[in-house]
Image (cartoon, rainbow, N blue to C red; front, side):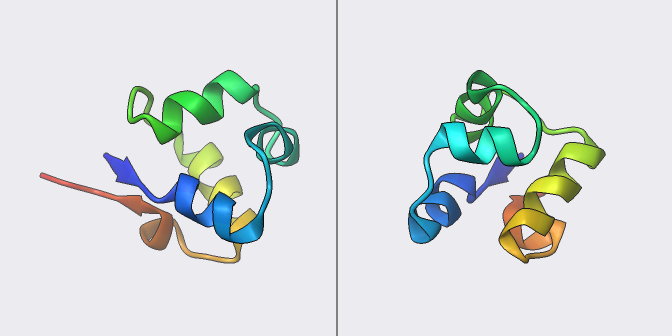
Length: 64
């Protein structure tokens, strides 16, 4: 699953640490998500999308 977290974060000019704190995860989790090494749980995906004012589908790209 791909995502546009890094792009959204840069648009909003926030650090990985700031995003991590806002959605109650570690900075390492954000790094792993941005690098495609970790797939977010539905709850985390919802929190990240809500933080950016987007839908889950706008942040996370589901592939077959």
